[in-house]
Image (cartoon, rainbow, N blue to C red):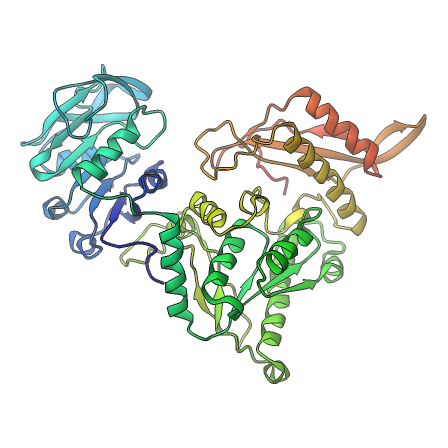
Length: 540
């Protein structure tokens, strides 16, 4: 697949194990310059082959003097390409070029008052005194020859340094985080003024480039996509359809575990609104039969996942024509997947070559039955989640698809604790619909429709859970023995950690009264106020 932008306009972020590694790349893209992340052990020759316009060295948790500390190929600083280092990136730049790093007596974590010292290209247009975000115990104690110290804090004498003659710049603080009040200005100065780049990372151009690349890749072949209803597969479908029209067929397998109204919404958006060829397979009874008596959550996941692909491949064979179906052959060549850039980064599957550390296993290519093969089209594999949402909006997808809450692949199957039955599904769908409707109505902006979640105080998800217990209640002067519903609403910036949302009491009371009054079989509503950790966002 062709790169989604002009490779001559490319910033490479070298990752030294940074907490904010992906954030750096996203901030650069926010300034409309394309960026990619590579591991820090890349050689100068490999890096040069990528033809970067600029290089950024990320932070990292290690001490530069530790035996197993990440190193950098010193020849990278001789490529004549502008380099900007943050935190560990400043320290590794310093020691590699002849400076020194020392352990500070007092650590510096969080906001810190910084004072500029003299002229600086990086700080141009920012005030003498400003607040930056620090996170370190080590700091540069002496700058390499040729460098000028451009700022300091009470704890850190060399909070930033630069050598304009070699286009080398570095900061001990993190300009990429929102807490550094003039961080965006510094990145702007580096990209536009120092590196001479232009803001060419534009959604309309991106779409046009991707459309052209998909057409060249596919030719006249047939293409298939498994539509899940999630934002990634939805945006991939809309993008590929714009490129090749009716050569694409989407298959939506309704396993019955989606939220109320979602299957109908998916059909309406894609088949009617976009005119994308869509095959809907009603497999609800098939799944209920397979899940009967199953209570273990991992077993539920495996059954739902494996059966999904069985159904999908049955349809793929049929799409190939009657003759192919009779012979059991799949003649559809291409499979579209909604793989996004964080998937590539986390799996270590860097497409530029070289080695990468595996953060977690991520298997994008599904296990296919014997005799079936697909070539992959992954049109989103260089995009972050917020960019995927922006692409979806630019392609005309409705907000209910583009800004859909995160939803587990097994769906409501893992929000029903214990065995899944038709009755339980009906109860949970109705209760969950009330939860979402009332929270959305109370505050339409509560679930941030941006895809960029810098604030840890944004409501990330809100939903209902049906536990495997019954509770005593009184309704209409009679004793009841019915299901409770658990309400879960969490605030998060990335789902790695989460806190329970402080929803207004009146809103909680309204949700509770509606569920008990309108959902048969429910007599109690509880609110989960556990953070992650120790809990998880989902219950199974």
